[in-house]
Length: 355
Image (cartoon, rainbow, N blue to C red; front, side):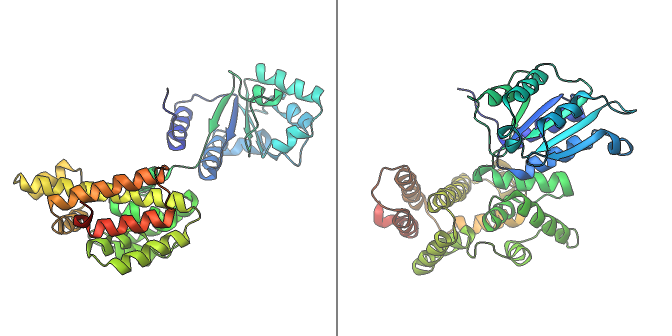
């Protein structure tokens, strides 16, 4: 089974293709990640030189135009320019109220498009592929792009990549994870907060720490998983329970939030386990940082300090607890989300009691 490309991969590939001069006559854009959709449309518009756009670009909305007018535009040739651009946003309504004979004319155009016109059709929501117009919009000659929201496990990498690409700033993994935890998966909002962080780091020496991030960004969720992890490290059971409950209360999806928490805790404890084992093998801090691909001295110092709190026996109990929580989320338990998380917290703080 082929692995589905993420929206981030599709976006990068599509932009790279345009930069190489590979422009398609018809684009169909679908999906719920408007950050990528808006930026892709902006990049398509930039294909037409600024001084040619007044006469050779049309930005339309599906609920305001007729398909007959769209067909007239795409069939016409550019005025003293190489290309014409026609963008139709929210085109669903346009196709719903178009007579069948005009739909047939449009489908015929899709088979033999004007090579000097770029037609971009934005659909929200997606049109089923088993309909006549749906089949036509997903034909072999159409360059279709589906921009779904990024899965949560890709957010931290996206934050680091975006900061590097747009601001030439290297953010540590823990800063990226905290940003994703505080803001959520709204990429427009995340990009705005990245701008704040990168502006701040440009005016300080050294690395930004987590408290500074919280101060700059503010909390969209109240409590975050880093504070939960800190309470677990300090074995503050009641505080950890309180933070865990608040995180679930602040979440739009209890199950989704629990999946994010377990994934973060597994990733963090895995690093601690690796540090413990490498320390036992008499590896230096420099060797350990290189082995774990950690560039941030601040982040490594925090991990090293946390690793000292746990023994090898502790880690066995901790990973068993995380595995059981993962199985419970997948339905191998009668407990609800709150019960799964509270038991996990208790087992992480007292791993010996459940050996």
